[in-house]
Each structure stands twice: as structure tokens, then as C-alpha cells.
Image 1: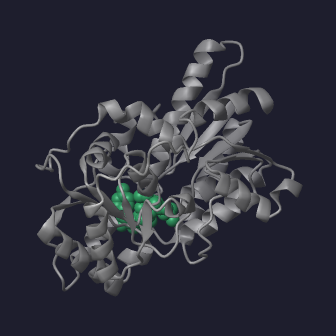
Image 2 (image 1 turned 135 degrees about the vertical axis):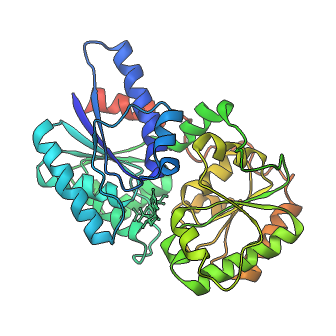
Length: 364
Ligand code: UD1
């Protein structure tokens, strides 16, 4: 069986690391039923610290094709990716095209395959924020619609698909758990402190990269002011996405907290393990905070990971600076509280193996 995996952005490298490793393990045990995986990197993320470092550190098989499509407006970026992925699919004639998550690379890979009648496998299917202004929401809805095999990470995702009538569609749907949980469990012993961070413990980990927050001066200023205020009480460490860096430099309000370059996965899990709380607008980091039993203050109005909000370990605060500061302070006061024990919201850390088993047995 031949699979083309299309990746392009940072979180997809982490997800692909787990499934690619499971494919290699499957091939060792099943030499007569091997899965050949060809990785295609669209080049959506291209800086060394946004891309190469993940492949090196996590031992992800090197991409067979690197498309160097780079950044741009969403239509242009997705269009360029679509054209190039199509050429590769035509040449390689895979049995499946595998895509992860909700980025422009996800949509381009899925669309190129579906138009050529190659079944699309979507890992992290069924998630919804119900906010169509987010580019990710458009990407995930469209990708689900044209996928033949949908691997959901949560019960909520399964329910979302049911509510949209997917049981009447010609596709297969599985709840396998979350591949990011696999990644944390597998790699956490390899975590290491970033050289750029000289604090051992007692800090707040912050990240900001959503277009919604970075591309509005007002929203970004609110967030920077809030982080400045928190930093007066406890150090705030913020690995800064290139998009955010560009916009922060143009603000009137200047950041006083510790801004460092983007960190690798091993460094990020060190930060998660050693911080006192997380404040973010990332999707993935909300779950990772939970895996490390840290409260997460989410600077968005909605989240796809609603079970964390229901469990009262994740708090949606939008970009209201007072609410951000208050919720972080509250989280710090309750830091020792172990309300996370015993809950397995994201499966059993065997999602990648289950995906590969489905691919090799049920669909072959
Ligand atoms: C993308 C995904 C988002 C995901 C995020 C993870 C979409 C629509 N968004 O957002 O869902 O959470 O990746 O990080 O696909 N840039 C660089 N170097 C890089 C990459 C980006 O300088 O290696 C800069 C460019 O100026 C670019 C900007 O960052 O214009 C934004 O990059 P882009 O890929 O458009 O979106 P992300 O914000 O990274």
C-alpha cells in the first residue's frame, strides 16, 4: 500500500512524527503487508526553527518532495500547494492521501486527492469551533467533507460529525484518540530546557499566533499589556511566532516579558512541564497544557477542545486584558490543585498505532 502524507505547518510535523513511527513499526512486524509512506512538505512553514528542527529532533522521515510554496495570502498559498500536490499524486498514484488538522496544507492536500478520486484520510477530523471567520474552521469542514476515512480524536468530534449527518455519507469514521497525546507520552523523557530560557521553574508560558489576535493592533495590544502586567508578578516566557514578532514590533505598547525565538518540540515540552500555567491562543497547546496538568487560559472566544472547558481546566478569556490577568492569577493560586487526575479525555496514547492498524487491515 502506498500513502502520500501531506504536511506543511509546525503542528503537522508533530502529528506526522507519531504516525510515521507507527508505520515503520508496522512494516518491521509485517514485511509482507508493508505501507510505503511518501512525505510531501508544502513549505508553508520554512524557517529552520519552524520546520527542520522538528524533522531532525523527532526523527521524522525526510520529505520525498519539498514544494517550497512559502507564505502568502490564503488563496494564493492554497492554490500553489494544490497545483504542486496534484502533480505529485498524478506521478505517484498512491492508494491514500493522509492529511492532518486544519491548515491550508491540509485543505490543499485533501482537495488535490479528492479531485483525482484518491481516498483522503483525515487525522484530527470532526473538530469544530463554529466560527467560520477562522481559516482553520473552513479548512477542517471542507477537508472532512471530502475525506473517505475520518479519524476523530474525541467523543465531541464524533458527535459533531453525527450532527452533520456523516453517518449517512460514504465514509468511515473512527474515534482513535489524539496523536498529540501519543507524542507527549513518547517524547517527554527527551525534554530539555531551551538555551534562551534561564528560569528553572515558576513562570507562565505564553504563546500568541492566531491571525485574529496578531493582525489586530487593538487585540494584540490588549494581550501584550496583560502579559506585561502578569510579568510583574511572575516571569512570562513567550516563544514568539514570526508573524507575531512582526506585528508586536509595530505596537505602541512595548513587551516587558521574555520573548524568545520559536522553540523545538523537546524544548516546548520542557516549558510545559516546568511552567506554572499556560496562556495561549494555540489549539494544540491547550491540550498539551492538560497533558502536563497545567491550567490553560485561552485567548480566544471559542475552542474546538470543549471538553477542557467543561472540565474547568481551560478558561476562554478572549482578549480582555483584565480577564486574562485575573484568570492567570487565579490559576496560579490554585496551581497545586490536582483536578486533572484520572481523566483520559484524549484516548490511551495509542492513536497512531490504531490509525495504522485501520489503514493496514480494514481499508486495504
Ligand atoms: C498556520 C496555520 C494554523 C496553525 C499554525 C501553527 C493556516 C491557515 N494556519 O498558521 O492553523 O495553528 O500554522 O503554527 O494554515 N512565517 C515565517 N516563517 C515560517 C512560517 C511563517 O516567517 O517558517 C511568517 C510569514 O510571515 C507568514 C506568517 O508567519 O506570512 C504566517 O504563517 P502562515 O503559515 O500563513 O500561518 P500561521 O500563522 O503559521
